[in-house]
Image (cartoon, rainbow, N blue to C red):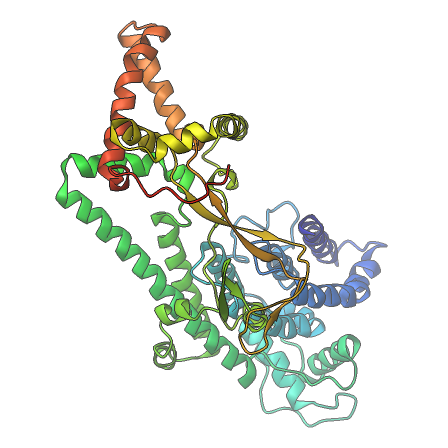
Length: 513
């Protein structure tokens, strides 16, 4: 579907280029087709956007649909095919929208107002502290706040309100059209009314862009923007505090922790780096300024409304769950809360760490080969591995430094057998939903970290340095570096993992890996 919407956006661009290529000084047989092109396909594009906005998933691919819609409502960007339209992302930079485009606005009024009223509620269900979601909001607010675009929209809506029955003679409206090509109010109202009847029928009640309903929705979006802004600022402050704390302490232990965190950064794959957080903060700030200026909403009202629900309260509002033998499980009401956006749940990976999706910082083939090797060794020497992990003394200490500790993981079975009652007032979790199952992993070998690109890069650079500057062969490098590397690894494990010092209690039954 993503490729389909990309093709739709490309078609919209070419349609704009074709319809805007009319040259009065050079008549062409295709001029009539250029003038009637949008009237032939406007209904199809409108219904496509309405259907997709109702069904598109709330993920990063939602931006593709938004970009297609933004390309449709900005025909002034596609007047010269020799000039790239995407040179300044955001729709034509700061150049004002000329009044000659009011006829296009009137002929496509619902694609501005109705589609916007469908997009705003979906923005309320997004986590605006995520970089991609914040960028979506920034793109929409920047396009809508283009110079003079709001004047075109307000003039068209005022014409529609002043002339509710455009086929009957009406007195001239009180608003005087400024110079520069603005359509007469009767013409603008007739074009807008014809468009609304064509799209939605005679009984449709038009919701204006600058009306009370849209303003209240924008106010809620601004409250979410402020909450997301505070959440991003708190994350930036926490990252800066951690960095300053470690820099002030110094020492070998802090250096070792930094080295270990750097080596594990590609595997852990933090959701947002500092640069992304700062960029997200800039997008949220700019989007809030655009929306405040466009809809004339005071910042004090947004601050007073957003303080009632802080980011910590939003994050603590988890959906309804019940405690079972397999952990916390969502109820039917909790699923409804998640789908409707009333509650949020922080998602995290709860499965086998060795089966975690391969990240960008890992080599795909090496990850799979090392997993096959670890699985073979764990299955063949499972009893020796388990007895060595739970043994005492120096041998047990070395085993626990090498092996991964026992872990309880959760898996989801897509096909349940029968409904299960969790005794929470008659709420059932039916078999149509995936069933959460707990599974105990025994002590085991894991070579996943060896597939890290950063680890391999360090090893290659060290080997090249020893070969070039020291003349050490590869065989001697392995002999000289293997023992120090093992000693360093064991030292780090003893410093960071105090649980390896004493043997854990042996469970009654230890399942195989």
